[in-house]
Length: 366
Image 1 (cartoon, helix red, strand yellow):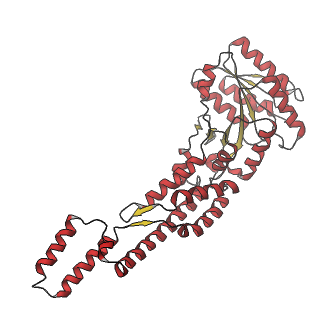
Image 2 (cartoon, helix red, strand yellow; image 1 turned 30 degrees about the horizontal axis):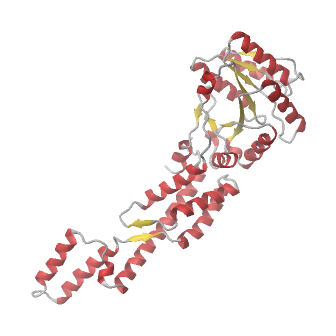
Image 3 (cartoon, one colour; image 1 turned 180 degrees about the vertical axis):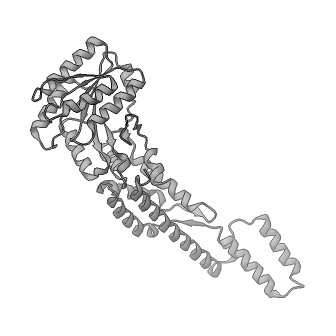
C-alpha cells in the first residue's frame, strides 16, 4: 500500500513546491522594490506596538547618537513592514507551472479533458489570491488543490444498504458488469460477505454461461459463504438463469440477488445483446461495473461503451492497492458522473472498502 497513488502525489507536491518558491521570490522582489521606490507612508501596512516603541526609541536617542543609527533602525523597520505586505499570486506565476502540471496529470493516468479541467479549476482558485508573508503558503496551496479535486469528484450518492432494506418488493437485484479478469466474481463474494454481516440474505445467478469454469469458480466462493447458486448448463440463456434466481429469491424471502455476467470485449455485439436481454428480464435495481483501478484510460473507455449500451449506475474498482499512479478514479468520477461505491484493497472477503473522495485526497495531498 506504500506506493498507492504515489506518482500523482509526487506530481501535485512538485507543483506546490515550485509555485511556493515563485511566490516567495515574488514577495522578496516586491518588498525590495517597495523600500527602494515608495514613500515611507506607502510602505507601512500596519504599525505594531513594538514598531511604535522602536520609533520612539530612535527619536529619544536622535540628539545623542550619530545620525546613521536612526537611518539603520528606520531602514530595518521599513524592511520589516514591507515583508508583512500581502502578495498576490499572479497569472504569470501559474502559466508555466500549470502546463507542467497538466502533463504530469496525464502521466498519472488522469484523462486529458479531466487534466485540463483540474488545471483550469486550480488557476481559477489561485489566480489573484492574496497571501501574507506569515501565512502557511504550502497549507493554503494544499487546501485549494484539495478543494479543486473534490469538486471534480462530486457525484450523486447511492446508499446501497438503505436502498436494499427500504425496497418493498424483494429481492433487490444487482447486475455485475465488466471485463473478464477484473474481479467480478471476487467482488460478488466480498459484497455478499458485507451484506451478510448486516443480516441480509443473498442468492447468486450464474449468468456467465459463456466462459469455461465460470460457474465452478462462483460455486467455490458460494460454498465458503453459504450462498445458494442458481445455474444452468454452459451455453444456456443467461437471462433465463437470472429469471430463475429472482423467482427462487422471491419464494424463499431472500433480500438480494446478485447476477454474474460474461465479460468479453465491450466491442462484442453479441455480448451487448446478451446483457441487454438480462436487463430486460431481470430488471436490475443496480447495474454495477467492476473494473481494475490500475488500467487507466482503458477502464474509462470500456466503461463508457458499457454505459452507452447497457447503462451503468455505479462502480467498484478492484486492485486499488496496486495502483501506483492514482489518476483513474478522478477521471472516472469526472467523466462518468457516477459514484464509486467500493474499492477492493486485497484478496480477502473483508478487503472491500466503502469509497469516499477522502480515500484519494489524503493519499495524493496529505
